[in-house]
Length: 123
Image (cartoon, rainbow, N blue to C red):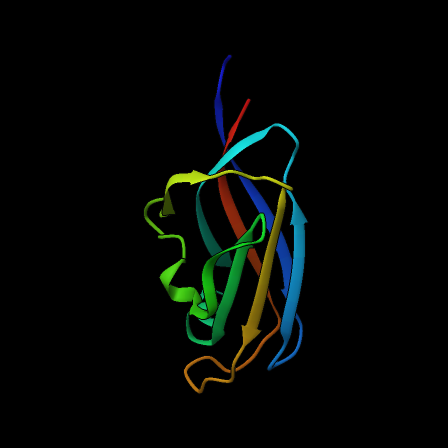
């Protein structure tokens, strides 16, 4: 069986200061494992200074509530992903993110788009 590694993006918008956004995404049926993840934004300073989140895969908490987005951000010069060790089995294929925007004087609010990237293994 041939195995392929792909990056799957899941995107949502932060439209107001202090937004708390709960999103649920579904993985494709051919995903075998989730190997790594990263998060980015069209306005990176918003994500870096204002963002925190909780991430679950198949009901298992990967990063606890209020985990700082800057710890999961993609590098500019390289593709930086946070490795999930041996990977997470997708189970029900459900990925949940609870994202919070928090006011910060280093990054006055403007609406921004957040993208969660999952590096997955496909059959």
